[in-house]
Structures are given as C-alpha cells and as structure tokens.
Length: 271
Image (cartoon, rainbow, N blue to C red; front, side):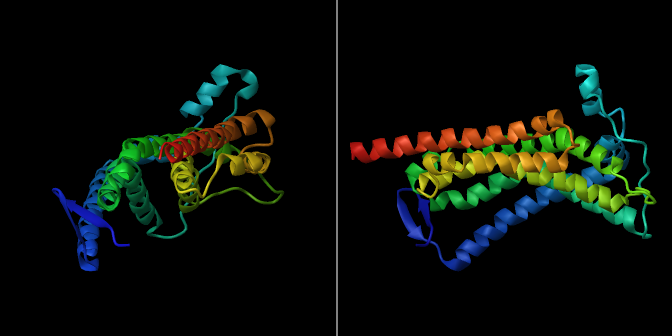
C-alpha cells in the first residue's frame, strides 16, 4: 500500500514521483547538514587530530587517567607508537574521510529528523503517537553508543592491538589503518545502541517477542562475552566492563518487548 499524505482533513495518494521528490528534498537537507559540519571539522585540523582522532593513542587520554585513578590494578595505557603513511595523498584523503564521519556523527540528530519527516506522513495517527519522541531517543542512544565506543572500546582495543606482537615483527600501523579501526569502534557501536528502538518496533508488529528473547538469552550472553573478549585485553575485569553495558541493552530490550506485548494484549481485550 502506498504511503498516505494528510492535507488538512483530507488524504490523497502520492505518486512515485512525488515520493522521490520528497525523498530528494530530505536527503539534500541531510547531506547539507553533514557537509556543513564536515567542513568545520576539516578547517579545525589540529583540534580534530590532536584531541579527537589521536586521543586514544595518548597515555594522557581521559580513559587511561580515569582507570588509573580508580584502581592501580585497572591502570593501563598504550605503548608509545608512531603512525605512518605509505602514500603521498594518504594524509589528505584520511583527513577528508575523518571530517565526513565526524559530520555524520554530529549531524545525526538532524539527519534522522529528516528521515523521520519523510516516513511520518505514511503512518497512521496511532502509529505516529506510538513513535513520538523517536528522534530524540534514537539520537541520544546513537551518541551514547559512539561515546561508549570512543572512550571505552577504542582505548582497550588500541592498547591490546598495539601490545600484541610477534617475534621479528614491529607494529607500525598506518594512519589509514588506525582511523579505520577507530571508525569501526564508534559508529557501529552507535548503531548497536539502537537495539531497544529496533526491538520496540519489531515487537509492535509481532516479529519479536519477550519469550523469544528470553529463550535465546544465554546465546546472546555468550556472543556478547565473545565480542568483549575479542576487543579487550585478556583480562576478565576489562572484558566485563565492555560486555556489561551491551548485555544491559539486551535486557532493556526484553523489558521493552514485554511492555509492548502487554499493551497489545490489553488493546485486543478492550476491542
């Protein structure tokens, strides 16, 4: 069924061309927002590299100082290492890539808002009401996920990967490699933190149920522990500190799914 656009009290079907034109407008606004932020980040090169990108490789990074102050047994920091480039334009191209991804992260609330404006007219009033606040919620979850990846996953991963050596081999990572890993630790984590929202809508349409999630709870727990073990040093404490928040999201998702199921059953009974 084609989405419906409401105009006053009346409704009319939008043609495919109308949809494409509407989508083009929202995509254009989202891209402009991303590029505007990217240009600002590109111009502030020293801040972008010294404080943001190269932060997790510095022993003075907030995470290392925090854990050292918290407990001497938790104190860790990466060894001193230098990033290298192998191609003449690698630094410039990497700078462009970094600026774009930072633009995407910072402008995410506005980008998602444009995405929501495109989808909203195709929803029924009760569906729009159920999804109220979704832009704010998704934006907060995404930013929290990115911050978790940047301040928690990245420092542990950088320390572990740089300290992991083989006889006769010297770790000399390229700038491109380092940035690629940093992006992998942050943006995907922001997407993972959207799990409660995804479960909410899957539960609304009956695809996901709390019973199903509880059935596979042990499997999810093992998978999360494996992920934590892979990206952290072989230390149970640090593995737990990575895995615990991700598993907490899974439990929160079960709770959300249960609430949705109860509301759906109540609505069916009242009807």
